Length: 403
Ligand code: HEC
Image 1 (cartoon, rainbow, N blue to C red):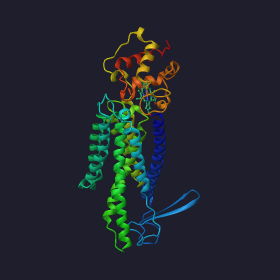
Image 2 (image 1 turned 90 degrees about the horizontal axis):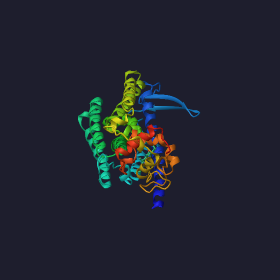
Image 3 (image 1 turned 60 degrees about the vertical axis):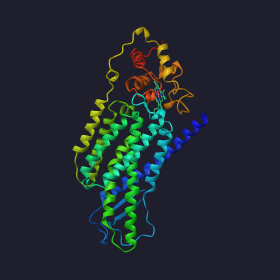
Image 4 (image 1 turned 135 degrees about the vertical axis):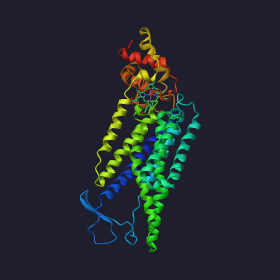
C-alpha cells in the first residue's frame, strides 16, 4: 500500500511536470502567433502580391523575417510546420493529472461532506460529465448565429460559465470545483484546435495543393476559435494555480470569486489585444485592477462571520492539552511523517503535527487554515466541530500557549 502511494506520487510529479512543459509550449506559441499577427506591417514592403503582411525581428543572435499569406503562397512548401501536439499533450497530461490526483483521491480531494456528501464514484461521474457536457454546450453555441458577434458570444458564454461554476461549487469542495472548471475550459480550447482549427487548415492545404482557392470560411472559423482561446487562456492559467490559494476557493462565495477573476483577466487580455492594434483603452486594465481590489477587500478574513454566532470557549478550557487532542483527532491522520489517510506518502505541504513543538511552530498557519479559511481539515473528512475550531481560535488569540 505504501509502495502504491509512493509510485502514485512519482506519477503525479512527472505528469504535472509534463503538463507544465507542454502547457508552456502551447500557450507560448499561441501568444507568439497572436503577437505576430498583431504586429504585422500591412501593407508589406515585400513585392509578392500574395503577401498580406510582414515582420522583422531579432532573437537569439539572428534576424527573422516572417511573412503572412492569408490564402497561402499559391503552392505548398515541402516542409510545413504545424502547431498542434503542444495542445494535445497539454490536454492529455492535464487529464492524467486530474485522474491521478482528483479522481483517484476523490474522497479526499473532491468530496466535501459540508457541501454535499457524495460517494466518490458519484463525484468522479459528475466531474467527467461536466467536462463532456461543458464542451458539447460550447460546441453547440459555436454553431449558432451568436458566434458572429464577439460581444454577444462573450456575454452568453460568460452567463453559462457562471451557471456551471455556481452549480459545481454546490456539489464539490471548492478546490475540486475550480480545477474541474479549468479542465472544462481547457477541453473546449483543445477541442477548438482538434475539431476546428486543424481540420480547417488541412482543408486549406488540400485546396492549395489541388490548385483551388481555399474557401475563406475555414480561415474565419479557425480565427473565431483562436480568439476564444486567446480570451480563455488567462482564466485557465489562474485556475491552474488556484489550488495554492484557499482564500479564493474555500469560501461560500467561491463561485463569485472565480467569475470576478475570470472577468478581470478577460478585461486585461482585451486591453492587450486592442493595444497591439494601436487602440489604447486604459479603462480596461483599471476596471480589472478595481475588481481585484474589491475582491481583496471582500475576502479579508472575518472569522466570526463565517462560523455564525460566536462560540465562546471558557478560558480554563484553552489549554495546550485540549488543542493537542483536536489536532490528534482531526489533523494527524494526514499531517504525520507517515500519514494513515488518503494517498499521502509524506505530510501534506510538509506540515507534520505530531509533536507539540511542531504544533506550536505552525500555530499561525494552523489558525489560518483551520479557523480563518476553514480550508482544513481538507473537505472536513475528519469532522472537526465548530467548538473545536473555536478552541483553536481562542488558543491562537491567547498567544498559542504551550501549556
Ligand atoms: C485529509 C487530509 C488532511 C487533513 C485531515 C488535514 N489536512 Fe491540512 N493539508 C492537507 C493537504 C492535502 C494539504 C496541502 C494543500 C495544498 O496542496 O494546497 C494541507 C495543507 C495544510 C497546511 C498548509 C497550507 C498552507 O499553505 O499554509 C496547513 C497549515 C494545514 N494543512 C493544517 C491542517 C490542520 C490544522 C488540520 C486539522 C484541523 C489539517 N490540516 C487536516 C490535507 C489534510
